[in-house]
Figure 1 (tube, rainbow, N blue to C red):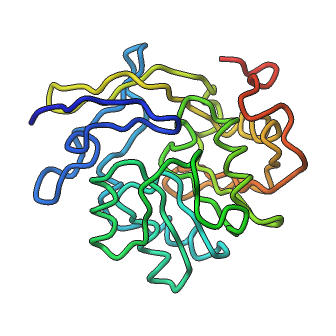
Figure 2: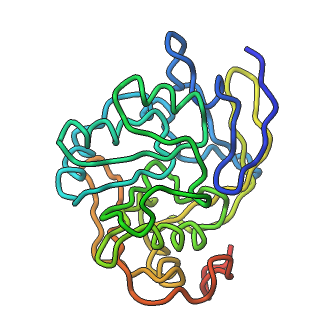
Length: 241
């Protein structure tokens, strides 16, 4: 399995498709490791991306309003589930391989960058940021501010975060699989304790937090006011990585 060249995009790494999103008929990604420059293996369940939505995820999705857009949707499991519920949903994903897999299971997905042109900007009731995707680009404030732009006035951003006690930090990371690794790309880890401060700088406030039976944590964010500072601003005081 050859590792193709990797170009870092403005929102998420354009990882070689056969490393990040294996083709149908190959391994489902359970051997992929997301590793930081410190050597630690970060929390990352690649196999989950290729499986149907879990019961916990279905419960979360059943409680949100549509239309919904899923940022970094991968093979589209959440979008496909929403479609099965009769909820209008769209995924946005940079990986052409993942887009192909998503469309094969009936998910409506566009290939593109969340920081580029996005359909129906400002008219989404819910923006999903699952599976650690709040770390995309290594700048959660910028990403959350962009998510705010995508929502309607009373919309929400549903963000998966790490459990309380997990410090938020910016990292240089890469993906490993079968002895191969991608180029480095910027990433971030955001814990439940930091999401309120980070969201505040993006013009969002935490409306509630949900812990699932398996220990996953989700922040429900709504608009709080104008973005201050701009989307590329510094980390909140006391949380600078």
